[in-house]
Amino acid sequence: MKKIAILFIGALFMLTSCEETEAPIYDGSQTLAYFNGTSSTLEVEINDSNTIDIEIGASTISTSDRSVAISVDADNTTAASDIYSFPSTVTIPAGEYFTTLTVTAVDNGLTTTPETLSLKIDSIDDGGVGSSITHSVSIVEICPIAATFAVGDYTLNFVSGGIGAAGFAPALGTGVTVTLAPGTASTERIFNVKCYPSFGFANPPADFSFSLVCGTTVANGIVEGQASGVGCGGSIAFGPSTPGTYTVGDDTNMTLIFAEDTAEICGSVATTSYTLTKL
Image 1 (cartoon, rainbow, N blue to C red):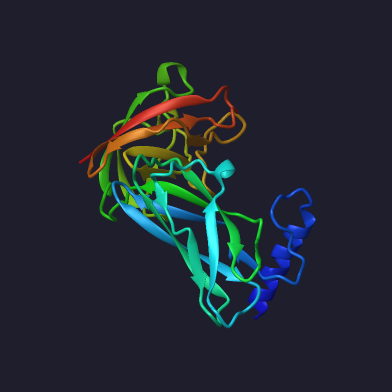
Image 2: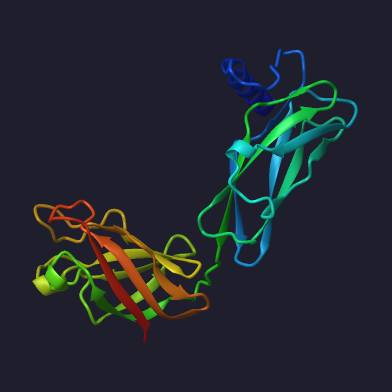
């Protein structure tokens, strides 16, 4: 009962504090239907489909089934209508406070850039009103990565870019053997490498992280808590740039592109590219 009371009070406050809303005003004597949460993420594997369950609640209990009507909040939706589907009504059973709305999404032109489906509650049986607070579903394409994919020894070769003229001091060296290992997320890979080895400094190696995202590599840079150990009065940092590439299902060759000197302590930000070739 505590959970219901907290949600009810929060929804009531937001409704009564938004004087400009066009939704029916909740006056305290009606039943209020609401989403239990304001957002969720629906991940869809490439060339597949997936579902997510969203809980819908009512502020009162009833001795009979009640129908809740749901529709798309078009003003805040970017997802095309052929990407998603959901029933226009769901039923809260007699004697219950909650029901579930199931949203289905298909990879019909999805990309790794999320699309938004915004849902709203239009009405509930017995004269109640729907909360004006919508629920946003972020629909995104993902590509599962096996734990053994892109793992093991690779040759890291410098291609272009860098803060030095014509890349005279490659950020991660070149012709170096590195060992790729899984990171915290299933799509993350980490390798340990000495930064700017051509300078001959005594800086310790650091862990460099990147992610595998449906045919692209996304550089994350040196993992938190570590540093390149080289810089102009500070330590040069690396970060995301334009994505590199890999072939889905084939971890033989990859390109890695990252932004070098993101804090501009040694000049302007540079774009640096490498190749990773499996040994």
